[in-house]
Each structure stands twice: as structure tokens, then as C-alpha cells.
Image 1 (tube, one colour):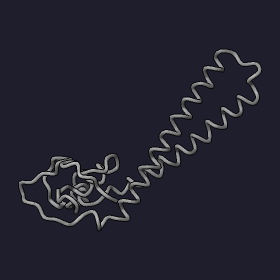
Image 2 (cartoon, rainbow, N blue to C red; image 1 turned 90 degrees about the horizontal axis):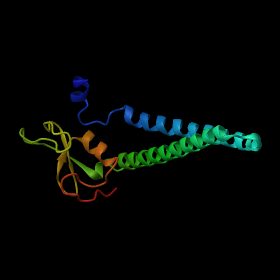
Image 3 (tube, rainbow, N blue to C red; image 1 turned 120 degrees about the vertical axis):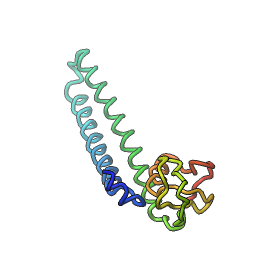
Image 4 (tube, rainbow, N blue to C red; image 1 turned 60 degrees about the vertical axis):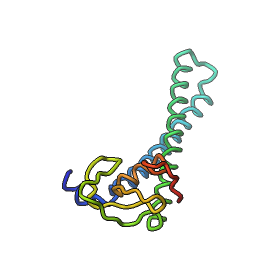
Length: 147
């Protein structure tokens, strides 16, 4: 794994986009499945249901809401990822670093780094992209990163 990391230090892991697509597809299938289960049981068994069946339907509704939440967050991350990839050259400048500098995110040595164009702070490309999936500001000075 160390060889792979050093070889691709300026790249996003190739599986990240595929993982997001997989999470979106699985969440969509789960939402559809739970929706159909609820619809079927409410349509056919509602007249003769006991307490256990109500508890079971409650657990399905809870799972449905969880799947919808996962689908929503994964879709948002995928959208942010695509926006970021489309505006890559405007956001980052290739930069050189001194041998004693460390990446503020992963705290390892900055071998090949990118510089944010709006504030000038330096990071590993991959570290910054992972950071930007959750927060859209510089990790050091909190300056907003405009897409």
C-alpha cells in the first residue's frame, strides 16, 4: 500500500468515484425495496395486524429513512466531486515545497504538493480533495474555497 500511496501522491484514489456511485446505486435499490415492502404490507395485512407486525413495519420505515439519508448525502458528495474535478485548474497551482514542510491534513512530508490559489496554503492534492468532500474552506485559514 505504501508504494501505491507514494506513486499516486497527487492523485485521488481511483476507487473514490466508484465508491460514491456504488453507494448511490445501493441506497436507491434499498429505498425502492423498503418502499415496496411498506406498500405491500399496508395494502394487504393492515386489517389483521398484531403488535409484532406494527413493530416490524416501524423498523422497515426506520430503515427506509436511513437509506434515503444515505442516498441524499452520497448524491451531494458525488455532485461536489464532479464540480471540483471540472474546476481543478482554477483552484490549484502546482507548487514546490521545502523539505521540512508537512501537509497540515495528514502530517506527512510534502513531496509533491498543490497550492490553493486564493490563500496560498500547500497540501497534498489527495488530502485536500478528501477534506473538501465535507468542508469547503481552507483547513488552515478557513478562507472559503469558491468553486
